[in-house]
Image 1 (cartoon, helix red, strand yellow):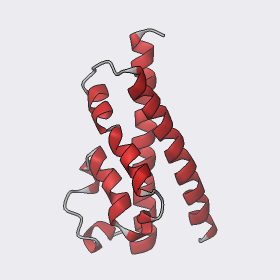
Image 2 (cartoon, helix red, strand yellow):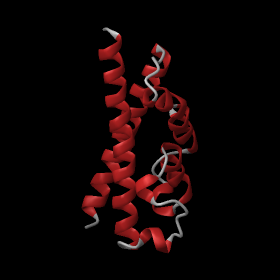
Image 3 (cartoon, one colour):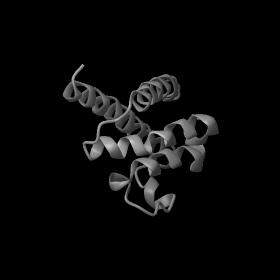
Image 4 (cartoon, helix red, strand yellow):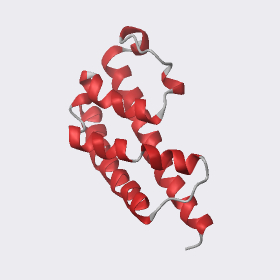
Length: 123
């Protein structure tokens, strides 16, 4: 695989991880607190401009989200923050960093697919 394909694939993984985390946060907190959840929870930064590491912190901070990932799983997600920054600044990532993206994507897919099914059942 050449560098363009490799980094495009890495970006795709990252995009899927980040957008899935973000969508789940918004859906879960809106369902639990209503459309004004940011105001109710006194969120410091506008959610739409939140950084990746801030998205991860939501899963350790707000009760409707805290049961989704264990501390260890959140730490795995935090491990890809530097990789995310490399991708954003078009720096080639290592094979180990790529594999961690794959691992985190699988983790997010498993955890949030199960959580989404629970959300659907509770409607």
